[in-house]
Length: 117
Image (tube, rainbow, N blue to C red; front, side):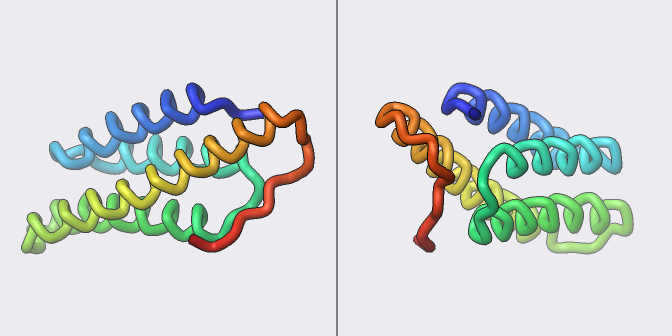
């Protein structure tokens, strides 16, 4: 089972990768981000909200990398989209980890079913 500490560690790794992307990183950073995101969402029961937040985060990172190489502007808007997508992903992941922890404390091992926020 995944712990809140583990989620926080992985969220820090996501932040480091995104920082690299914001500072001009390319395909290697995107590959690392994709791998980490798949690992993170795979640790939880399927949740459409988490999947959407994950897709949005990767898409925003991919657009930033792709458009930076061809000189498409405005860069500031793409950075804001990446930041917003990251905040949504972080919020979803932290919520999932909290629910898992609460269930573990109650000793309930049934799968988590999420309700839309």
